[in-house]
Image 1: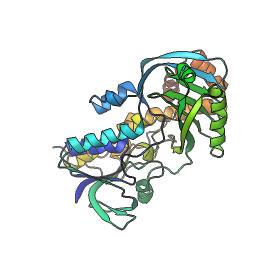
Image 2: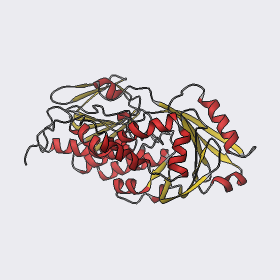
Image 3: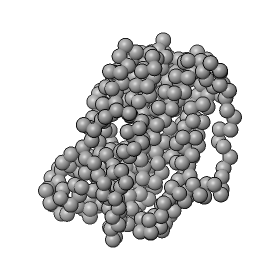
Image 4: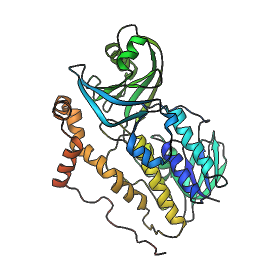
Length: 378
């Protein structure tokens, strides 16, 4: 029996596997696709939090470091902003693989990877979890981390996590002519309300542009929406080639149980996606680190978790509380009155995180996970 099974090799799952294996746990990592695998994503990293979570130099994977940004409301007058620390642009195919390879290296002897393993079912009992592959193969562990995305099998099989209708995005990796690159290659571009209930973006990578559209309210016809956006966002005749991928965005939709005594959901599987701009990578990594800590404490006999909510509590305290403030107080403005959102927070340079915190203090909700499981004193 393994100490832990991690399902999924995105940043959240790979970081959880790395930390568990480094701590001496015997870990099995399951991935339904063969590695390396592509992942539809803009690939923009918030520098400070991601550096702190990884704790090692991964600068060789950064395709561009962007410090300037341009913001528009449906192609209206542009507002330019400089980022305090900038954003790092990565390709998810290489970035995700890098973390997994780091886990295999640092956890050597404690970690095993099986790619091409599609999970069919997950069952939990008092002593552990049993994972059955679609091939019929069975694996067993004391704990499991569900890092298998918005449509992952782990949460569904165990009856936890969210099954709300996700937002939808479609990304394109676009090779452009030199004149288009001269315009867009040194900045991030955001365009609100040019997409119903969402926005369009352009991120510069290593000689190409990552462009896309995302909508929190619409799912049909998104390829056509991207066509319309690109026709307005880039000069005519400047697209040389493009590759497209669509994907769900499981934006945060309020506190929910994302754990059991033997299971923790992380990242997209737990719908830990910022509800305004759709950022998810750093929250996946942070929740993966929390899952590793919780499971490590249980393996070491330092944590009793009779109600199975230890992971849910910590994720809510460290991640979910801030996301929920945005969901309650800022998202309605973003969706119902994008003009107000743009004027208040871009033109007038308001801080919507500060506004959300202020309103949350005035209109606080009860703690969704009030009962704290007792710890076992070592």
